[in-house]
View 1 (cartoon, rainbow, N blue to C red):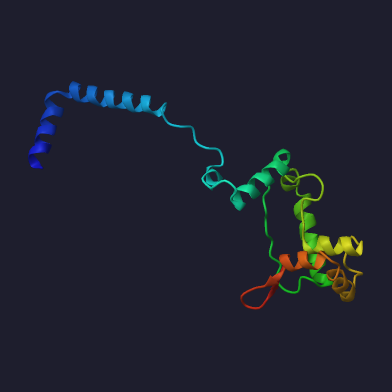
View 2: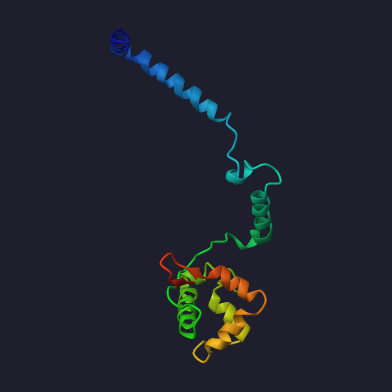
Amino acid sequence: MNNILGRLSRLVTVRPWLTLLVLLIITVVMVMGTAQRLPPTEGASVAFLPPGHPIAEATQEIDDRFKDTGEVIVVTLVFRGEPLTPSGLSQMDGLLDEIVQDPGIGELLAPGTPVVAPSSLIGAVLQVDRFESVTQEQIDSARNVPGVGEAIAEMTGTDTDGTLVA
């Protein structure tokens, strides 16, 4: 090993131009090789899945349906405590209104109803804008509407310490 390093050091010090020429040739050959590479695959993580794979099909369906609206970003806000009470729904609705009305956020949202929350579902079923005058019985009856109860069940749950979250 000592002998090889000694010879290499002698070559570099005795003939520096030869060393620079070899490095230049290696660099040019490597640059020429970059043209031989295939271009990166768009959506490469999905491209490697076999044809007919459920994730690949779901990704393609989402892309087909929402291509014009841009990216879909899911943001989860966690409300602790009793979310499905009049005060909990009012708090949730107020926070979501503040977020949607923020100019930096509002302009990024899709047109229509871009935010879905338990408060918006229950408000739509009860046909109310505010929850101050809504009773707990009305909220419970709204949860029994077919489709709404299942959606709310998907958006709510229990934390590891037993706290209800939405």
